[in-house]
Length: 330
Image (cartoon, rainbow, N blue to C red):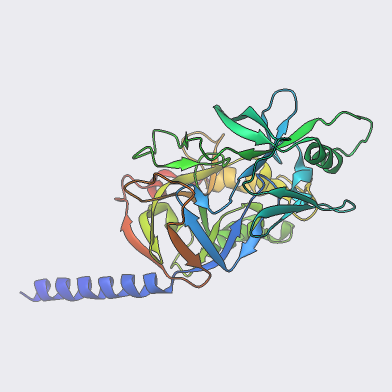
């Protein structure tokens, strides 16, 4: 009988501690990235749609000839383009150039309907015209010898349904605009602190903007605890935590200069955050909004603000969670 009472008391204490810890988790920062691979805009409040934060990755730079997407992986100078959003337009700023303004939704006679590529997907978009192409060309090319614009600026055709990978998709409402693969990305302050501790004093601590999340959360009891999260709620929005985000070369690019600064954090992540093969390293979590249906994917489904509580609704069993599967070598 004594052992049973002790067990029950221990369970109650664990449950209280878990709930108390959960209440401390909150949204620390929010970003939206209207132009894929350009700088983000810090928000106090975000409007949530099935496809991501409203206007997130709605615009993209493509190669003029192939119509294939262009990111910082190929042109790091994209990090120097700063978008601004108004009620009906996106305004792009770049050092030494006049701002460029384009419509968030209105099509006109100068916009051509074109097929563009994002990874393996081919989707319809609107080419925003020669003026926009010339502006992007001038911003991204360090050498001005080429007279013909090499790049085009496009806006996603929202009548398109670009679905997330079927391996992680529950229904056909789970779609994205020009994001790499998922509509939301979440990272934690505690995990970034741990990563910087691993890297050590060989360089200045990495800021969160290297990882380009939509949500930075803080207050969890340990770093990388988000590996075990299965479902979370922020305000009225419920998200499925689909998978950790595999990282490319972009986190090695200084987002204030547009220059690749070092091999970090990739070098350290290869030691500390990998699965069975070391060619993929992981930081942050991909989220999908949990809704039964989403016929009009641009409609607002919820509101999230800085300071909102993050409630962990479910966790993966230890043996199947990424917290168990992601390996760390010494």
